[in-house]
Length: 155
Image (cartoon, rainbow, N blue to C red; front, side, top):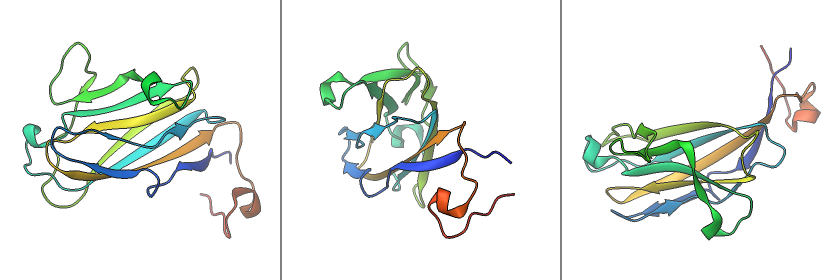
């Protein structure tokens, strides 16, 4: 069986931070070199209200050929906000006031620029953890040692 091999390219410790109301959280850069696809998971602490107004006003992906912060630009198709507009591709889901608020981006990196980052503007003080796994569809680990683990179990 051929299963794409994931590689952790941004861990939750490196990709964590917080922002206050109307502030901006920007994740560490996600280096997609060698990845065909990247799955980005975002965990957010609770928010002040389970309403659209309580959810982040911005949740988007940006890309760049370099790690220079000013060179990043929004990726069309991955621009979320609290309401639709000409520069918004989806409305951010209404979060919870208890538990974890989770978001996921699955990005086809073929044709994308090398570096990605996540940008979030919360409407209340929130802490965010971002993890990213890269996948190469042509490669699959056939043994535990090739996968870098003690056991490789597939089904």
